[in-house]
Image (cartoon, rainbow, N blue to C red; front, side):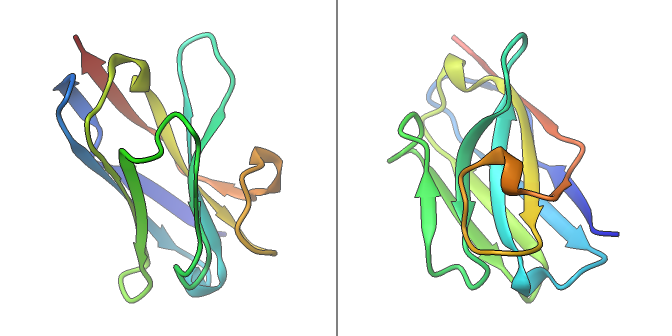
Length: 124
């Protein structure tokens, strides 16, 4: 009964920034590792970033390393993805995911709960 709701997506130009938010309810947020994944048209869902339950460890896909930053505020039951220097190849639906058991992970198969997704479109 975990619910995740993403927000913050939109249409921006290359080089611009966005901050995505994911609000969680219906579970013990502070015990969950959280991740961000994205899916472009005609492609599979790919890992973007993940953060451990206490926020002490993070992981990033090579394609976003140095540009994106994941963070969380357990008091607000919210995880964030700050996206800077956006590129057209970042265009995708971005999904928030929660792992109810285990620690930080980059494998999509290890996440149990998913949000509805938020569209990010980066124009040239």
